[in-house]
Image (cartoon, rainbow, N blue to C red; front, side, top):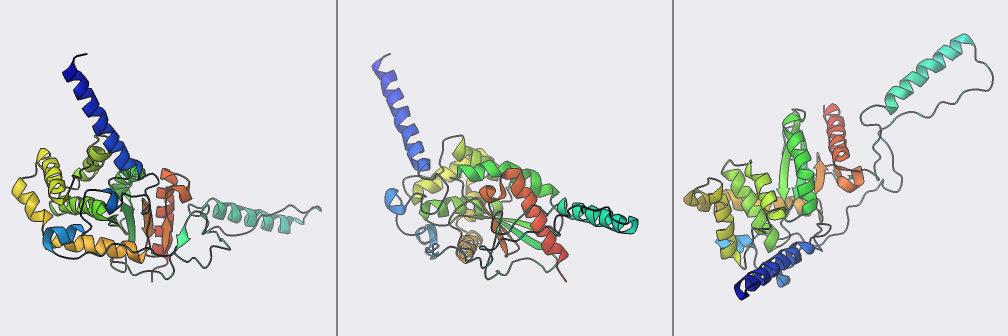
Length: 306
């Protein structure tokens, strides 16, 4: 191997190590484990301050949400186990017991019968207002492009979204904890403003599979890297810049930050159902289970609407 080849190999290893170091801090995808501003060559100012002078407060540390019922989990199930009597029952009583048992079996196998509050999901106390019409049920997903767990959940959400019940309004909320998260949040909202939701999963793959964190050494370089990504996927430079620095995108970042603070979200991915319930892949028991849990809680909320 010649000297030039050795130099290229060493440079490749250095770049790979840098990428691993960047995302190695995101194990668990929590606010505490996310890259801190002091560990990054980005300024301490928020992305909005750096770009257009609009302050965006990052989520302050807050205690875990209080769940007054967590100590005594309940269930969406109904009824108690039916035990057989030692003595033969009269025909009428036997028929009544059979009908009761059948009713209980139907209740136990109902779609929402397996979920227990305090185990599979928690309640939000107090419940938060939603941004949906009265007839709709709001479902939020908090995510971050640098989180491999969010990337793992995304295919399930992509499959569920077009088939979900019409009464569910699904909204993605990017993490805004620090400058790195806010840069990714600005990219997400820019893509949405440009009517390119198809690039959401592409951005995930770019970061998680392609090894491009879509972040540079500072705010300006980060914008250039993200603009290059957009241009490679058919977005004109002037359109990208206009949306990237727009009031709409800045206000969306501010609103996302407000939602994370209201729900005290310090890890992603996290699902919030109708301002009342929170769940994640771990609590639900898996990706498919989380989708089922969201559907069942949303259905209960829809059925309880006046």
